[in-house]
Image 1 (spheres, rainbow, N blue to C red):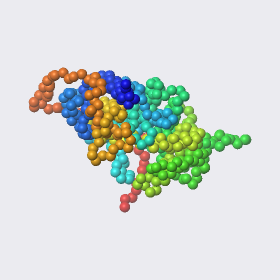
Image 2: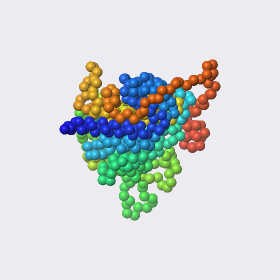
Image 3: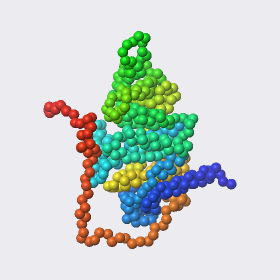
Image 4: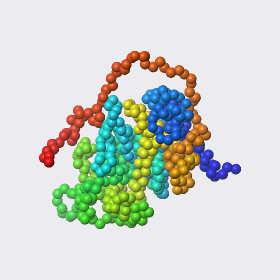
Length: 485
């Protein structure tokens, strides 16, 4: 008789093997080499430090030439892999709600002068005010968040933002496609709680709410502390002449003394931050102007109302005087429980930073020195497939703990790095759709004494100069010179 634990492990093995079959089916060209390359990333000891070093892993049965040929000339059917990711079981909140997050992580390539489609990526340096703009490829990721403290996320999509593309429009289209795939696979049905998408500072959350207003989602975004919003316009008085007011009183986030009484105020005791105070003001909206994304809007500019939430905590690790966090939600008329659920979901957004760190420091996402952006996209989707297999194997792997490492707080709460450490013991028991390599001989290579006379072009970084000159809001502004001391 099979026990409950054995049945659960058998189901987990079957689910992981089925995803491996779907992943292999999405590889069109050089499928065997790409699949074994993903297995090498999963099973190699230690962090991935170079692309050619993966050819020495036992799971990669082909040579280093086949490895480079697969990355540079292979083909991944991305739409099929996206559908396979959307069909997997996803983490949900306590109320059954799906919480998504969207964030950009750069693949920096400052020294790749011949790489195409590079743009300037915003990178935070060490110290205050040390932000830099470094050339590279910016990738927008969509992931599902879990509840509670965790370093796990379910990555569903990745899109590279080109230098000539509007980041807000790309994000809106990416989020729309992800929501449509979830609805197509039955992950969200009519009557379920509305999905939530969490954004950090830097996103135009009000414009995103306008572009995604027809979807069953609530958008949550962080606001800068110097933003100025407006409250709803007062009702029109009897006999009042003139055009009716579109905006009410000014709501300056940086002047708390002038704020009206909040519509909702809650206090929550936390173990890490002490008392958390959340105040919410209903129907707050920004005043839009015809510039940027609204420059070509047809008709009068809309009024996009939402709820402003101010979150204050008693203490922060390493900060004696924590500043409040301002959030804007695309929903109105929130209750106290909904306000608490929203700011708690926003705090879980930082779990995706652990995923980015795992991608770069352990799985070697940005280690290859690729020149073709299509090859970078191909390698990115291999890393997403690797991370998905680790997530499906989190209840199957054995904890191979080092003597100096702490044991997990609870059984089955292994980190992605520890699951990867024990994946080599699981790999022989899983589906192996890749065929054995055929014996062959290496090619003749370049004739001795010949030189490569083909000079690669050096494309510009970011938007070309003629593109900047076509728009009026990108013209250089006159700056008053300041006297040097």
